[in-house]
Structures are given as structure tokens and as C-alpha cells.
Length: 168
Image (cartoon, rainbow, N blue to C red):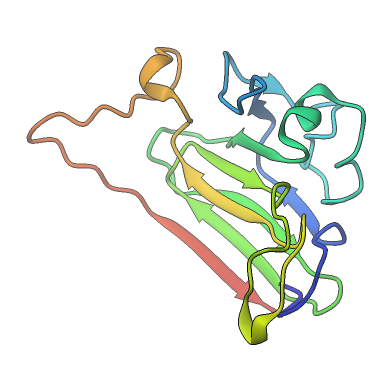
């Protein structure tokens, strides 16, 4: 959102409609039930910069070397088209709002980027120079009966909708 060549997303302001997240093991696979974000560095129910707590001494951040987690969206119904949240660059004022019918959003803060990837004009992007918001069902849902089902049977229809809306 800060444009080509920006090397750190830690100053981006993030707020999400998620009161819980899926904790992971050290292989980044969710291991059980959702946990509350309240009182943790995973809490973006109020605006925080992405970098504000990314290096906190919190087991879940150590496993992923930062954010690499599915946040469970607050939804009224399974197929609700729900507000996910907003991310904003203070440098440009560009805002990205997200909406989806999916139950979760994976937030990845570029923790394993090494600077080897060359983008436009050959510029290299180091660790935490990008952030991803991936609307989705929960990882490993097929093995977790408590998660929303990802099984699609013959004759069933799957439909998903996600919108990323940009403004300045």
C-alpha cells in the first residue's frame, strides 16, 4: 500500500473483525480450537500497526517469525458476506478494506522473505516488506471436525466471494 520499493510493512495500520485466531504448532498448522485475541499481540479488533507487537515474546509469533495465522471472522451466519477489516499505509494514505463469505483470513507478514525476490525495476524485497490477507477456510479443516467443512460432494455447489476495496 506504500508503493513500489517500500521495505517494511510494520507502520501499516491494521484493524480486523476477528475476536479469535487459530493457534499453530511449530510447523504452522493449526492444532485445535480458536483462541481469543484479547490481551495478546494477535488483537487487531482496535487499530494497531502491524509492527507494534510483531516482535513480542509470544509463542505464536515465535513459531511464525511474525504473523502467519488464520483469524476467525466474526460472522452472523456461515454464508454471510462479512467485513474482514482495513489496512492503511500512513505514507500514502491508501486504504484497503476487505469483505468475504469465507470463515477466516490468513494474515502473513512476509516473515520468511529473504530479499532474493526481485520485483519491478529489479528492486529486492526483504523480510516483512509485504503483507498478505488470504480469505479462506481454516487450514487442515479436513482433519479437524470442529472446523467448518471443506468437503464438496458431487452435485454440491461451492461459491465464495471476496472483495478488496481500495481508497485514498
